[in-house]
Length: 392
Image 1 (spheres, one colour):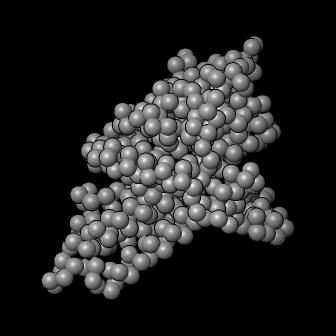
Image 2 (spheres, rainbow, N blue to C red):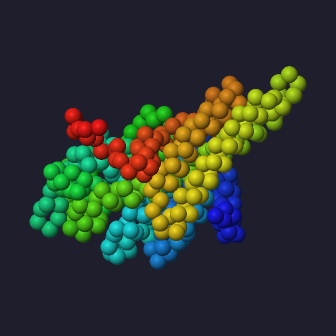
Image 3 (cartoon, one colour):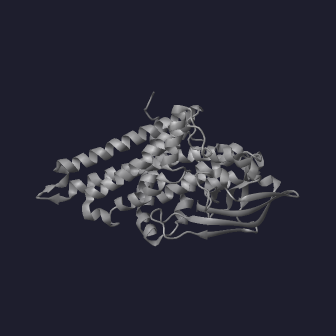
């Protein structure tokens, strides 16, 4: 396995790092304090080519491989997880789904706008009563003459208030469970579509998060993404790529924690010497470095498998599980290195901890990732619940 990056990958990573240092980081603290979505920054990400980076050039993307995409996400994630969320949702969940499952007309209509940042999209899967169990969703799509009528709600939807198009997953026949799910491309100016901002989040405070409602919303047949019954496959394929981008972003958090801790420990003095000279401080920094490097290698493996076009669901879950949990551990350790100074937002480490916490929840919780990994190892699916009294 060749772990060396190409010259192009090195250049793209360095460019993303410089952009993050010069443009993203100076804006982060004020946006976080104000709990304000930075629309200007989001559009700048499009101008830089970071939205839809793996999308084919004919649709407005850059045609980059997944390893390179992961490098971009890592560098933006090191600076600001809210900005990384824009990339992850726009690229992995929305653009990736449209490019893979959409008709040529749907691709031409939406992808150029999404890749450029002219328009934003959101991924309407999670509901108030449906998270990991997507097949139990209550949003309904009813067949009408020439199209569909949709009623229901979605929850915790990133970019839901600023999106021009929403991928809306709905059940067409409850008796079919996951085989009845369908996905629709819904312009957000469609009558019956509404969104409401969610406030009071622990982290990702400058990320746009919404609840969505569909009240008799009607869309034509042309809005259907893929076919009826393919909604579950569309969602799972999108989440597989989404988990990869979240994992890459968490490598960035780990890296940011190491950088901030080394800088602080070499400057901060106690008993007349820098605290970096204390063995236990060095031990904490070493632990963070090990977790960062291990997470980075797991993300790299997942990206390389995706670029080969071979199945990588298990490896992606491993990367997502380890990187997200490591991000929390590194942020917590970084605060310990900083002491009281790490508890306020003069330093980024307290924000790293707040932002990292949600990564173990969305795109599939850490517990779901363990079940995916366990299923691959044993051949037994422990995710789908068995009926009471079943053998075993």
